[in-house]
Image (tube, rainbow, N blue to C red; front, side):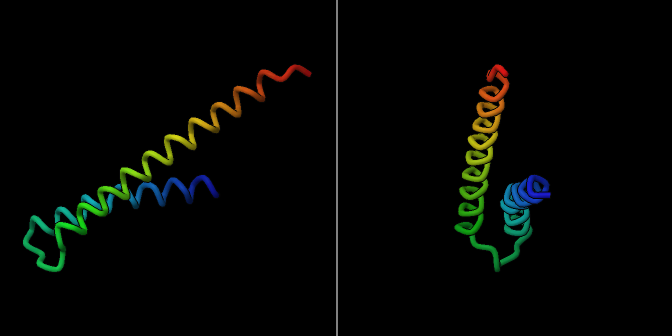
Length: 69
């Protein structure tokens, strides 16, 4: 459940800039270009964190598998 929730939150973060950009291009005056850029930066940061977390999980798994019983 936790991993599913994190994946859903990541997906939402990644889709936010697209939605804002579409609204801005369609002439929605409530959307500021700065909001689009901020959403893009947040999405980039989310991808970076997700990538690093995945890497750490894989490293931990590899270390656990190397332990001889």
